[in-house]
Length: 263
Image 1 (spheres, rainbow, N blue to C red):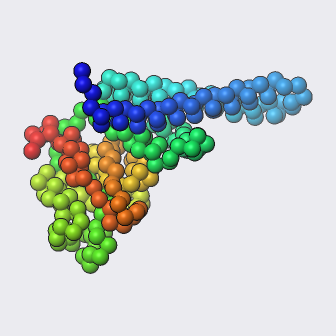
Image 2: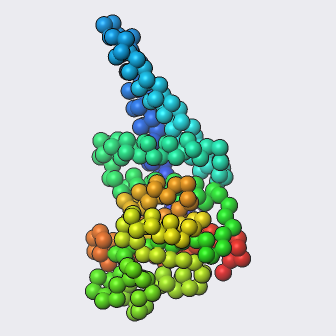
Image 3: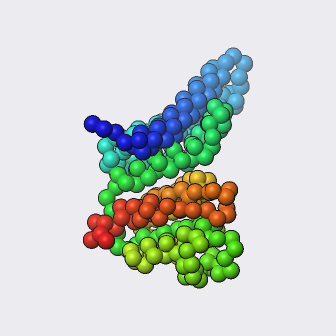
């Protein structure tokens, strides 16, 4: 069987995040074991022993939950099927251990954006493991304002339909997708506005376009709301005149909506 290059690349990306998660679990487990040893070290007062024991119990429970979460991620990725009973541990594994994963990656001199791309790949495949039958109005597409040409006088931050669809940036193409699929679309200047748009629209799922940093924080903030992340391209550097392949956005829309009759 012939395996495509994109498939191999996606597999490698996912493996990076899961490997760092496993390494983080091991480090925290070793730390808990070291604390356990300290409890029985001669000369410790009862108060100190009690405090350390409480910390060991907390760390041990956290590690067990995160380990279950990691197992849930692996099973979800392998079986392409959502495991509802492991959703809680998976959230623990990501939300609590993500800073440790980033720290471990920095220690190993792994680019932070590469780690975050790996996390986004893992998240996207876990979302795709679920079955969705959404109506267009139940889906929200969030795009960053940096997609707009910086020289454009028609600002879209408050009202995306201010766009004149002149073709100098990809906002016009995204609006064409919105109109064709009938979904809702909003422009977010950051996490606060993105959360507000989600509260206002109350979608059942989100397709989010952003850089790795904003996508990872947004995915974690929105949990358990399913979010498919699409990373933008930054030929002129961060936060200015960025670009998105609208085919990737349409692919995400198709995933959520195709079972509702398709397009």
